[in-house]
Length: 252
Image (cartoon, rainbow, N blue to C red):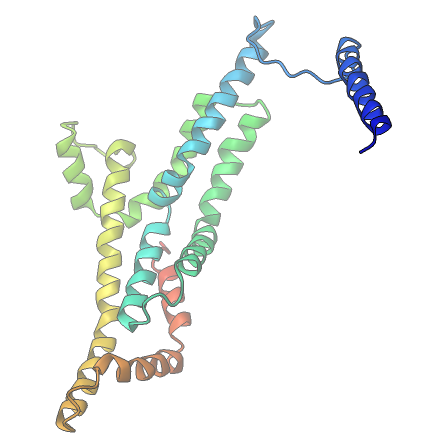
């Protein structure tokens, strides 16, 4: 670079250094500030509480989705199906989780519609208070959880909490109902998983017996039985049967 070029570059840098503070002083650059101000009315306090409540719900959303919906049973059954077929990572975890999520949305749609119509929408319209909204939202959720939960499991957590026995199903506290629902779902999912395993185990045993009778001891039976299990599963329209059975298992 020539001496003249150096002088031009230096002058441009000095000009930029002088111009930026001048622009800042003229408030042409945006400024971002955070702070706490005194509330001017009840609406400001209510809005702040709503924001805190919304952030709390968003933080607990994964746990709510897993523990208070049909997601647990569906994802466990689909995992059992993949292991029974012996396909290792097929379908991938993303496919299983995505299918379980969309099936959960489909199954829980009536419950969520009842919660929205009877609790969330009146609360957003200012017709009811936050406490009334939570109380109304508990009704449809309880109606979904109770038929899927065993009385034995509910009694277990009621005894552990040392609470008085509820007189009616509606008196069961959520602190006992939610864990009882989870272990009931796991028991149901494991029962369905056992029924899924039985036909595939029979196929493995038949293939292993045939290979042993032919003297082919060095050939892994799983390598030969996998194509037969895939053909068997496709011929009986397995995905249709599994998904349909899972959806019908939540019907009252």
